[in-house]
Amino acid sequence: MCAVTTTVLVPDEQGLVTLGALDGVRAVRYAAGADLPPEAADAEVLVPDFLAADQAALVAALPRLKLVQLLTTGADAWIGRLPDHVMLSTCRGAHGGSSAEWVVGALLTVYRDLVGFADAQRAGRWTTHVTETLQGKQVLVIGAGDLGRQLERRLLAFDAEVTLVATSARPGVRALAELPALLPEHDAVVLVVPHTPATRGMVDAGFLARMPDGAVLVNVARGPVVDTGALLAELTSGRLRAALDVTDPEPLPEGHPLWSAPGLLLTPHVAGSCTGHRERAYRVVAEQVARFAAGDKPENLVQGDY
Image 1 (tube, rainbow, N blue to C red):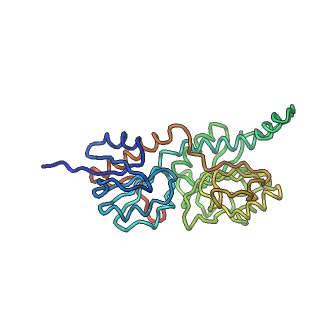
Image 2: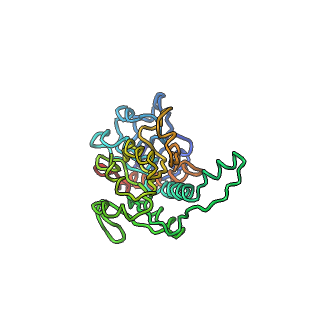
Image 3: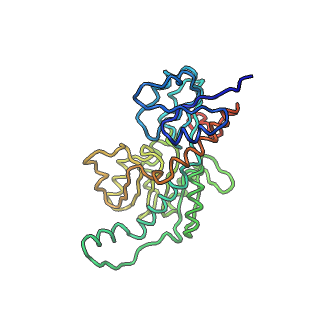
């Protein structure tokens, strides 16, 4: 009896090495925008590249495709764009640590006024002054998945106090319905939710109005989760501060008012972009593909909107 081999299309050399080492898996490299290799006719799994241009059109050219396995945790670019017989699996568990690290760095930058000190350094000014501290801050983390848990662990190490929120309550996690009462009690709000119809525009003028004066909004989720106009109004007034790794629109166009908004720390969607990110991603991808090749469903399957 011939052994069954699962053909997987991968976008890079790391994919060839990592997935090619799996029993029963044949990894084949492809290039987006170029002709597909002949092996694509047998491909059952497609691994799209990180933040690549739209690759959903590839699906129609893969007659045996059964699974799209992402290298990213965010799946909003693919949800609703696949045939019913094609499963979608995320890379949950690969990037939570690095994204959580960015959030801690952003909060420390805001509270310890590191941007202000850097500006003074460039101007040659010795500006000694007292800053805030992350210690003792009440931090509300909206999203209690891998990233939320990774962030909780790191914030607790800085002696901050953390409240996790998810769609429904469970031990150690508050319910989303409690947000109106929770927002006024917290010094910082961190968004780590997926982008779905339910979360789009979640942070609107009413949400922001419930945050106390001087509070910090941190978005490491997706830009459309926040109403940009409402946030700009609060930043311009000086009532709130923010740290954004994602924006709406994205990439942020030249001349957009967010570039010069007061009280804003802004980075270009790089929270997960650090050394080792491909290796970490492919470790998770290998686990998911191995399960599929063995006849089981990947553990990171997207169900419904997420």
